[in-house]
Structures are given as C-alpha cells and as structure tokens.
Length: 328
Ligand code: ACO
Figure 1 (cartoon, rainbow, N blue to C red):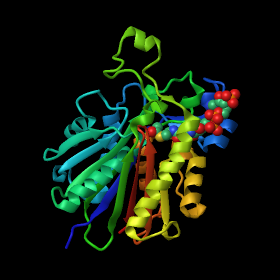
Figure 2: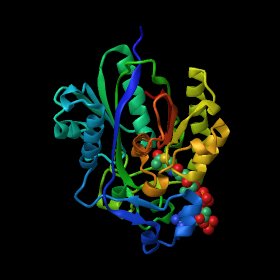
Figure 3: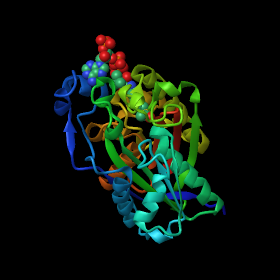
C-alpha cells in the first residue's frame, strides 16, 4: 500500500517580550484602534538583540520532537523556512541541526516568505510518501523585528517574531496528509521584499543609508493577491481530496490580517467559526504563523482526531500553498 504522511508532533516558541499596539503608538503615527480595525493585531513578540532565528527554532523544535516522541538523531531531514536566517549562508537549518544534535539529518533552508512552513511540509510529504525519508523536521521561524523599519507605520505594526515546527513522518492509520498544493508568481517580487543585503544590492554604507535592509511592502496590492491565491490553494487541495469548504473542521490560514482570513473563508465556503485565529497575540510571523496556530489549535483541543484540517498560506515571492490533513 502507498505510504501516507502525517504530522507526528508540533511545537512553538515565542520570545517573552510583548510589544503592544500602545507601545507602537509611541514610535510612529498610528493607533491601537487603527491597527485592530485594519488588521486584528493587538500585540506581537520581539526577540532581544542577541537572539537569532536558530535560537528560537531550537526551542520550538525540542517541543515538537518531544510531542512526536522521537529523538533528534532519528531525523532524516530538516527543512527550515525563513526570510530572517542567522546568516545569508550557511543555512540556518544546518545551525539548528548542530544545536539539536540531529547528526543523521540532511538540512536546508527555503525562502518562500510566509508560505515557508507549508512549502516545507509539502516537500516533506513527498519524501515520506516515496519512502526516501521517514522523519522530517519542518520549521517556520522568523525574527522579523530585525528587518522592520520602525519609522514605517505601513509595515512596523504588522509583523512579529516566533517559531512553529511540525514533525512529518509516516501515518500509521488511514488519516494523514491528503493533498498538497504549491505555486509561485515571481512577476511581483517588489510588492513585498527586502532590497538590500543580497547580490542585487550588497551591503554598503549607501545601501544602509537608503534603508534597503528593511521590509518594503505595497500592502493594498498584497492584500488583493493574497485573497485570490489563498482561495485558489484552498480549492485545489479540497478538490483533489474530494471535499468542499463545508467539510472543513478547522481552517488555519496564514495569520496576516483578519480581513484577509475572513474573505478567504467566505469564498471557500468555510464557516467563520471554523477559522482559527491567534494573529491578535502574535501579529504576522511570516513563515512561523501557520506553525504557531497549528500548535495552539492542537494543544487547546480545537483540533481533535478525525478532524479535517485545512492549512493555507501566501507570502513573498509571491508564493502560495495549501495542505489538507485528516488529523489522527
Ligand atoms: N496607522 C495608521 N494609519 C496607517 C497605518 C498605521 N499603522 N498604516 C497605514 N496607514 C494609513 C495609510 O497611510 C493610508 O493613509 P492615506 O489614505 O492617507 O494614504 C490609510 O492608512 C489606508 O492605507 P491602506 O494601505 O489603504 O490600508 P489598508 O486598509 O489596505 O490596510 C494593510 C493596510 C493592513 C497593510 C493591509 O493592506 C494588509 O494587511 N495588506 C496585506 C499585508 C500582508 O498580508 N502582508 C503579508 C503578506 S505575507 C508575507 O510574505 C510577509
């Protein structure tokens, strides 16, 4: 019988420092009222100056491995999605491999913006289904506070830091990952990107003076494309597995903006009460966001065995992805 992949365990870590909308009111011309009404975000977490992506990925990975009941040396592969790696190279996945002591694992990073964790889970699913690998650590981690322009109210109020992890392995029952979908459109790269620090605009005094090492985003345009593509990804994975929006028990969209999540749910036909939201506490944590929501939904009992769980993401690139899971 063909192998099926399943999520064997999840974990999250968020740094302890809470930054509220009221804190941001002191830095830029904004208000708690504007941020809550336009986005649904009330607070977010920021790492301190010394903490890097691998440090918080390590904490979340340990929890996920414990929950899955497997040791780090059993891992065959680590896939780490991030846009805020420890270094341009080598991969943060390799730093994490060493910190974890995952001596038998291959490791690589992937850059798919907020779709990073779902891209990772979908790639891991293929390896498990073919039998090439048995246990894969999928990490979504961001320290976005390090690339936020705290003078730009259009972006600094939206993002937060955190790490969300899922261990993917072979399913031992009929449940598991039923369908996956991934897509990209690179024609709109400059709608959401960090222009500095790569080979296009290497780091120079001039690039730093021009503030090229911060997130730049055309929010209104991103909003429209995000809704359209997350609807597409949702419908693709539901169709492939023979389900519709009404069958979904728990819907976890990328936690970017409350209005985006509600618009997507409505168009896919998922009732509002099935949409899982923790954006209010953490903001948009990019690649970590679906991992933070998935772990909380499992631990607070929202996701139960037998539930049909729809995960859908959209991020810089643009990239978008969906994963449909029968939870076990
Ligand atoms: N506080 C107060 N006013 C603000 C703020 C703020 N923090 N930010 C913008 N405004 C102002 C704007 O300047 C504008 O004023 P103007 O009309 O005088 O020019 C006004 O508010 C309205 O701005 P819009 O951009 O039209 O506001 P909108 O309702 O679209 O909300 C937002 C902006 C929240 C950014 C929204 O467009 C959005 O969420 N977009 C998607 C962003 C997203 O999901 N990004 C992540 C994608 S995933 C990834 O890979 C990271």
